Image 1 (tube, rainbow, N blue to C red):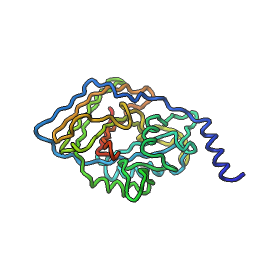
Image 2: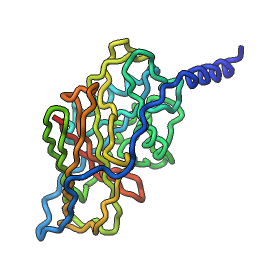
Image 3: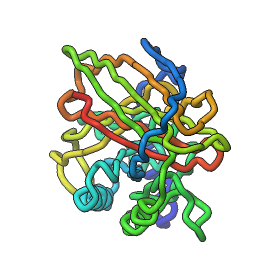
Image 4: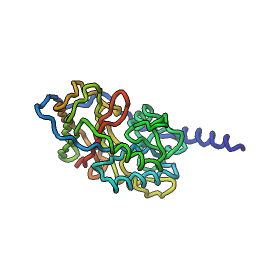
Length: 280
């Protein structure tokens, strides 16, 4: 049988047994507090952090190498400078079809992000700040280029400071998000997205083992994962305060969950700033 016929058959077989991740409600999240105001003195600028989105799958033989590269970059820069989110999608099913009997990492949230920012032709691949690096015309990049691209983006500044706190009682979390504009960005339109990721998930992985540890898996989005508009003039001194509630599912390891806030430019799609904290 010709090689391309075998490849087509493998895709059909994987697609036929593909698990469907649970649906997510993309409406704006319930807020116990949602306010904005302007202070007379703008805060000092926070340094810009960079977002690595590792587009990955459990049947991808080289995906562990991409995860290792992301961890290496964090170790060199710290999570205060580089934030990683792993996107387990249903795209490219030959690489991403879940294994029966193992935790499901694929999510509708990840599918939504990748559908919008571009589906790569193969894995592993990833977005660096969702930016298009000239001369490329796409946002996804081979993991071997990530370190250099991160270094380029770390030279950028950001007009918005991000701070978060989380109070956990049992499996219920109250998240407080504060966005402070340190300089004028009134010519831009920004969106915020708030995610929950989970690390330490043990599951089967091609190229590794049945006990491979998956980290930074995107688990939840507070509303639309592509972001919710910040509907006020983005002038120096502008502050947004939001308080949101989250019930952590029983099968998530709450001690290994993180909050990730991503601010994007609604026109370019680039990440303006990003920060992460432990959920608990």
